[in-house]
Image (cartoon, rainbow, N blue to C red; front, side, top):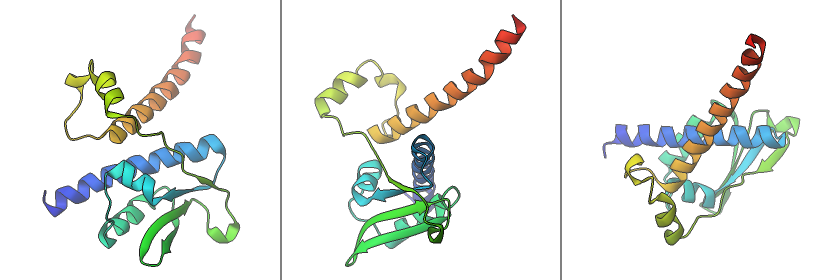
Amino acid sequence: MTQEKLREYARRQNRAVSLFCIVQCWLHGWDGITIRRDFFEQLFGLENFKNSRLEWMSSDLKEFFPHHKPKHLSAYFHSVNISRLPFEQNPHIGEFEIWEHPSKEYLAKFYEGFTPLFSDTASYDDRLIAFYLSWLAQKQISSQLIPSVKEEL
């Protein structure tokens, strides 16, 4: 994969994570969120984080969370605090929550009927985030349409 394609793929992944973080913050009333390395590993399928990938994440997350505090344990990237408010204002920071990774048997059974609908390149986590964000968008649209339908009746 070329560097440009890799960067674009990473940008899409990072934006999906930032949208998921926005929803998490909104649901819990947080100003920001802490994302541990193991969650990034699970979501991105990466074990080694190069400085360029960390810079990409920081750049892509800044659109929604302009304030960042990466945490390193020695030379090892451990987690990052992201916030919409400056850290000097003591924002309410929550802990990123993610689903457990299902077993291969469960996935095979679950996706059996949906196999033709999925791309071979998307991971389980990419698909789940996409489903979740699509569901939220549909829920928002339908909640906006329902009052107008009632008015017409």
